[in-house]
Amino acid sequence: MTPITRPCIGQEEADAAAKAVLSGWLSQGERVQEFERAVASYVGAKHAIATTNCTTALHLALLAAGVGPGDEVICPSFSFIATANAIVHAGATPVFVDIEPDTYNMDATLIEAAVTPRTKAIVPVDQIGLAADIVAVREIARRHNLKVVEDAAPSLGATVGEGRVGALSDFTCFSFHPRKSITTGEGGMITTNDDGAAACLRRLRSHAASTSDLSRHQSGTVEIEEYRELGYNYRMTDIQAAIGLVQLTKLDAIVEERRRLAHRYSALFARDPRLEVPCEPAGRGHTFQSYCVRLRTPRPRHEIMAGLAAQGISSRRGVMAIHREPFYRERFPSLSLPHTEAATEKTLLLPVYVGLTEAEQDHIVSALRTAIA
Ligand SMILES: Cc1ncc(COP(=O)(O)O)c(C=O)c1O
Image (tube, rainbow, N blue to C red; front, side):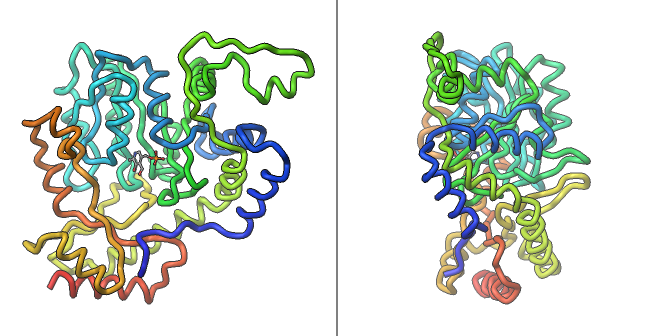
């Protein structure tokens, strides 16, 4: 079976993880610090704070942005469930806004109508690896004094103009799940240029202890830590960070290869009126977590996915409409987001990963045509 993705990982990462294990320091320590510095430097941000995954990164970033009970946070519904869950974890209410039908990202022209006196933040999502219209989102946030917490789970390595995702919003949250650009098994990272917020995030992710384990270990004196706020255990381990440090050296090559394969799919599908290929607006570099096609055919998507599976190919539904999942449907029963609902019913993700051969890709293309016919 051709998988939907395969991480680009090997002996070097295994050796780095083994070295971390054998060092005797397994929890958050110097390797996490080194990984944080490397990610901050890669994206061009002042600080990076590692966490257990992107969901916890989003939760902490929202808390650092001042979001709490009674607040509203604007976000798209066309996303993974974690985008909205993190807002609910922070005690706030998600306010779902529709997407642009071509980029599948939140339509910035609809945001202002969703702002109320209770709005505290906007969470744009860089869906499937394409940066949202961050420039427009930031301008709206500035006008209404809101924070921007970018859900960049799949977009480490994505670009906007000359800049990289990670340096553009008040907070940017990445995922290191194996389907993302690079992986640490599970893992997350928040980048920010705000010194005070970075210190708050470092505290909150480790039980809100006033000093870290590492600094107590290195101090050479007796340091008794204090707990002045409600904290969390959202720490990454040094084993994961060791893997992440090796993965980061491969990131540009991984993204380049995914982009080559995605553009090759688009060329192969170019003249097929039954398929709409993904768009990449000028100045925005996509990481192509997967290759998302919109089906322009009356045939139900699940039949097409079953047809692909019968030919040995894994696919996934494009992205969910969060407001239609039971937990949120109960809370927003009459919400209608036409572009989100159309996209979630008609989009399909195809495999893209380093190591997918052109012969395998040709087979996927012909299998999709067979499944549609
Ligand atoms: C847009 C988006 N946000 C958040 C997440 C959650 O990431 P994690 O699994 O690292 O918590 C994902 C994961 O798929 C995602 O795609």
